[in-house]
Length: 132
Image 1: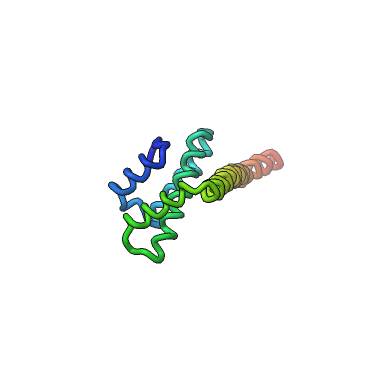
Image 2 (image 1 turned 135 degrees about the vertical axis):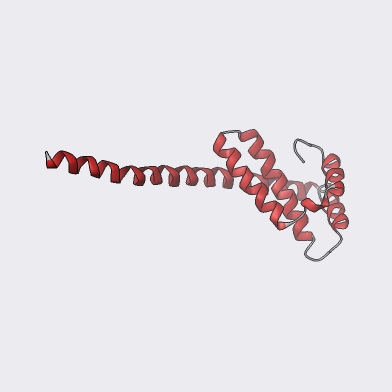
C-alpha cells in the first residue's frame, strides 16, 4: 500500500496481500504512523492515516463477512459513492490529527521523563555543594 494512490491499485494490492486485513495489522501500522509523525514526515503520516482508515473499514466489513476478498470488493464499491468518499476523508483527517496529538503527547511524556531523570542528579549536586 506504500505509495499506491489509486483505489484500483490499492484494491489489487489488498487482494494479493489479504493477510494485511486484520486488527493486528491496523494497530502496527497505526504505531508506525506515530513514529513517522515524531520524525516530522507529515506527508507520509497523511498517507498512513488513509491506509489505516481503509484497513479499518475493511476489517469492520469482515465482522459480518469472513471472505476477505468480498470485503475488499465491497469497500471499494462504496468508495465510488461521493458521500462515502467525503465521510472517509473526514475520518482520514481526524486520524491525521490523532497522530499529531499522540506524537505531541509522546514528546511531552518523553520530555517530562527526561526532567525526572535529571532531577536526582541535580539533587545530588546540591547536596555536595551544601556539604562544602
